Image (cartoon, rainbow, N blue to C red; front, side):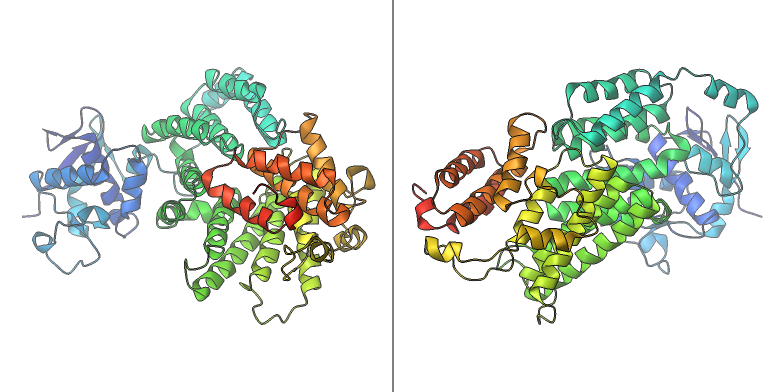
Length: 529
């Protein structure tokens, strides 16, 4: 006799062979069945963790599901060794997966919705997956007409919020931008629109360094995704949710957690194609992976071997290069300027610390000028296309690269400090060609101290608003160049004193860099330290 079929009802109340069933167990059964019958592969555990991202303990969901599978007499296995009988598999670490079922078991399962049978495509739709290419159902004419006839308020508010977040207001999100996001959410007509606005809001708050607001928007976004109301858009949203969560960890300097979150994304069989074929998601992923590797490469002495740091530097440069290509593929000039700045600054940092070109086959000046060209491309894009959101990073990086590769201990005397020879403004502008247009005398490009002074004046007059870290960096460069150009002048003393006060507003993890920077100044400028 052929084995009897097992009927699984996918509409509430969920039932398996007329027995009441938990939604989570039914979802896992359907997803494992789809992987086995349609894809001929096991189900990665990351798929389950992504689906139930808000659950307090995914292991409990998995444990209960397997208890239900046993009660329903449906043999489901786990782990990489499929030669063992299911009864011999160890239950420890079962939640790590992968999960699988035999072809014979898959053939016994019959899925229905309100009694109507479903094939693989129907089960995939119930699971919220994007239909396979060529199987995308057309939208009925009435539905398309109704969609086109909707009120336009949502798109107006979302566009205003996105433009405001891109431009920035004094380097932060102002009340008007935040209100535009709220208005978009109030006027959202469906789950897709609401999830889209929340994801965009979370990204905008993250870029403004407001991680509390970013997390709040992300939590609301995840509740919608978990409820399964965004259908075909779910893979892209799920991938970006991983990136946003990884950004949170990175911003808190929790590099292990950031890497773990990115590994969950790369290990997810459903989401890998999103990263591969969506250039904007690929840019965000590669850019963040590169930033994490950059942090690993620049860890303090004694943390990591030289070989590990050099490998991290190589991976960072590869990641930034891939992010640049993805940014151009995505037609995003804002993403391009971010990638260009990261390439330029990292190139110089890694070269200085012998993490690349350790044998010094390249001339210091050549690396210095090439790094400035990448920074020049970034600033040229910001100036030409009106992106960048009032950031001071390009100015800070240019000022720091212009100092050059200065190895002598110049903190022992004022004369030794002033004997250093940073790149001249004229030579720098020449190196920046053909991206030199934004570097005009009107913006201070006459002396390096004037460049720093111009940026600080923009902040002090309220035309832009730099965050505490950017302001501290500008003050550090201002103090350095004023001391180099003027000696122990009143202006130099004032810059140092203002920097000392500003350091108090920084996170604990950020203060060490500036204390160390102040110690490189001549003794006359370090009074009271």
